[in-house]
Amino acid sequence: MSLFRSLFEAIARSREIGTVVEVGVESGRASAVYADLGATVHCVEPHPSDELRAALDADPRLNLVEGRSPDVLAELPAADLYVLDGDHNYAVVREELAWIMKNAPDAVVALHDVLWPNGRRDAYHRPSPLAAGDAHPSAEGGPTVWHDEVTPLGFAGEGDYTVAAHAGGERNGVLTAVEDALTEAGDWRFEIVPAVFGLGVLARTGSPGAAEIFAALRPYTSSDLLAAMENNRIALYTRVLQLQHEAEARTEDATRMAETIAAQQQELEKLRGGPDRPAAPAAAPRREEPAVPKEEKPRSAEVSDYVSTVAVHHDTWGTFLEPDASIAGLENPHEALGIPILSGHHADLKAFAGYNTVFDRIADRVAGVNLAYEDQCSANHYFDVFTRIERDHHEATRIVEVGVFMGGSSTVFAGCVEPMGFELDLVDVNPVYLQFAYERIRRTFPGATPRVRMFYGDLPTYVQKVLVPEAATRAIVHHDGAHDFNQVVKDISSLYFVRDRVHSLAIQDTHLRGLIEHFNFVDAAVYAMFGVDVKYEPVGARYEEGSSVTHPNQWNGNYFLAGMSEGMYIPFDGVEWKYPHPSMDLETFLPVKRDPAG
Image (cartoon, rainbow, N blue to C red; front, side):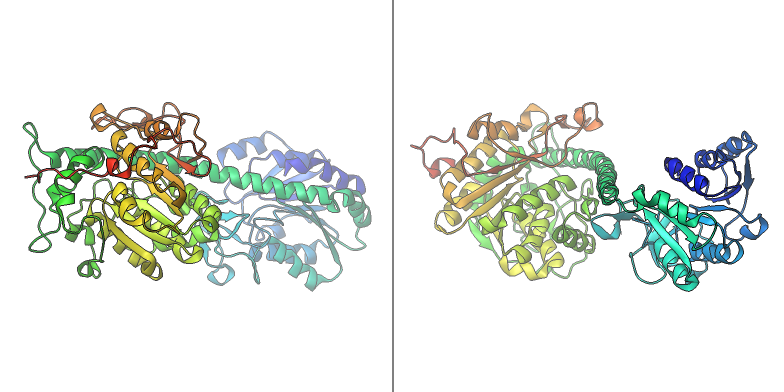
């Protein structure tokens, strides 16, 4: 309120201000502004801090009144100016105005927060003194300028207060309380200075100095420029709040992702076995002859060996699989499929609430499904890739998800199937993960499943079996499969032979590094294919130098490169292929069948 000093000085020039009642004191800085007008100031605060007590005690013009407004108003002398900046809800403001209009009809009333966010939405202090019938249903989080419902990254009370779950309607918000009071009183005038959440000035027509006050304020109350600047300020301010929330979410995501990757690679080392490694215990079988025993589920660096010695020997390799009906009714399908939950990382999609209605629907659906799983990507990656898909969906017919794991990306993409008209093909060398991802989609977006297929194979095999015969397809490929340099080169190389059918490539974990045996150099593979000057859009999270996740972890040396994006989105129109050579053929990059493992 101290920012409005010049406006209060204009009011004081228009009429004598001998007594001020300030409701809602905060730090006491504004209290001194009113005292500088030559007034005695009564500062109403129900729960003053020690710092506020000291500040008011230091100025003899300021008098602390401990109590709740409007209860204490009758205990104070009638004032020339009432400044209401305490409870920002309809019930309290309406009661305050009713008392002032009846008992101090010649007073000027200034009210803060008559515009967004509390003009049409109540806020309730914790604990709230209001009766149940005086408050709307409230929610954690806060509003943003783009979203009616409250979100975790909005203008939130941080535990000090909650806000009405919805804006607008009867008996909701500070401005609504003022308007209803004006309707009842009839002979009062009200104007708004559209700055710093809105300052409202209220005075009875014909009261001392009223006409002069509104004339002095007219340059501010009638300024379209000031209103536009306030709208822009609010948009920027709420964006800063969102960025702060996202930064915190990125740090949490990064820590959980690092734990996930570390745990998965530890599991991989067990699955590989070896002279110095004990073999992993066999998972309890779900059926008499499981399609793929637990020992045959590798991750990243060992994909080539696994595919050549295990997967390609299955009759279903290189085909589309049917959904496994036996897991449809299970509470924990991951247990029936023998998939361990290692870190339990869940990407917080609701961190991006309010940006896009389709993504909001996806986030709500994902949060509404009670299913044990873990994600491999950050919420930033899911959101950034989604925005590219939505932007470019008129130019593509299909999303191809390579490396489904437990369906994190797959489910987000399934949320694009119905509103954007996509087909969705899931591609993985492990049928167990395909079945889990499909089941997660079925529970989250059942209407999308007729357009979702599961292909058991690697990307080169999918290219040979599916994309080569389908000349009319235009695919957006999302790659989050093997992160091993050699396999990524093979995968991208296969797309060269159907480059006219691929719209773009989104590729994840370009910022990942680790022990040399894992060859986590996805970005290097991209540069090998398209050159170091390849044009791409960065997607996903970035981490600052010094963050814990930019240092090798204690388990397997994994870490993320500081300042580098989590992934890349590469439109294929205009890319310059450095590899493969035009004389090569697709067969070069297909897996080679070797003697069966075991």
